[in-house]
Amino acid sequence: MNRYPIIRQEKESWSLPACLQSIVKLRRVYEPSQREIAKSLGIGKDCEGNLRERMDKFLEQYNLGCRHENPFTNVRGDSILLESELNCKTDVIVAYDSKRFNNLPEIPENIFSIVLRYFPLRKTIVTQSPLREGDMCTEILDLERLLTAINPHEDEEDGFYMIDSRS
Image (cartoon, rainbow, N blue to C red; front, side):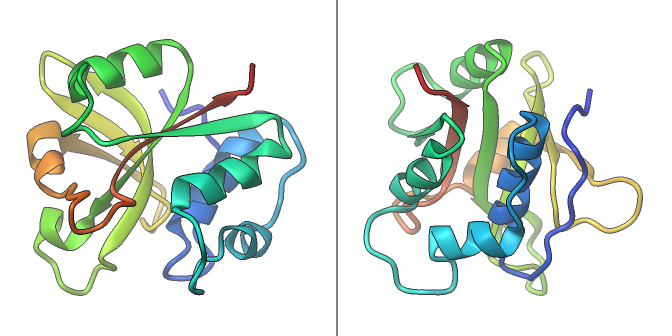
C-alpha cells in the first residue's frame, strides 16, 4: 500500500516539505532537501501569494503541478474527489488542523500528510504522516472526523492538494 519513501520532517513545522520531498523522491527526480523546499515555499516567513501558488511554482521545476481542493466547495464532493484522484495515480496531500482532529494541544496545529488510500465503504483514508515516530508512520483516519478538522474559512491552506505531471 505504501509506495512513498518514509521521510521524517527535520523541523516541527516542516510536515509539508517532508511530504513534498517524499513525492519528488518517488518520482525519481532530483531530491531537494527539506531546507530547500521550506525556503522555496517561504515556510516560517510572511510570503506573498497563497500556499498552492507557492507549491505550484516549486513543483514546476520538476514538471509537476498542484491543484488545491476545498472539500466543502468542490461540487464533486470529497469522496468522489479522493476516489478519482487516487485512481488516476495523482499524489494527494491533505492539510488539516491536528489539534481539532486529535484534541491534543501538544501536537502542532497544522499538519500535512500524504493520502495513501481511500476506502469508500468504510469512509476512511490511510495517510502517511512525517510527524510520526517509530516504524509505523501511517494512520487510518475517519473521513467525517477529518472533515471536521478541515476549516478553509479559518485557514485557507486546509484541504486536499493534488500533485501530478504537467500536461
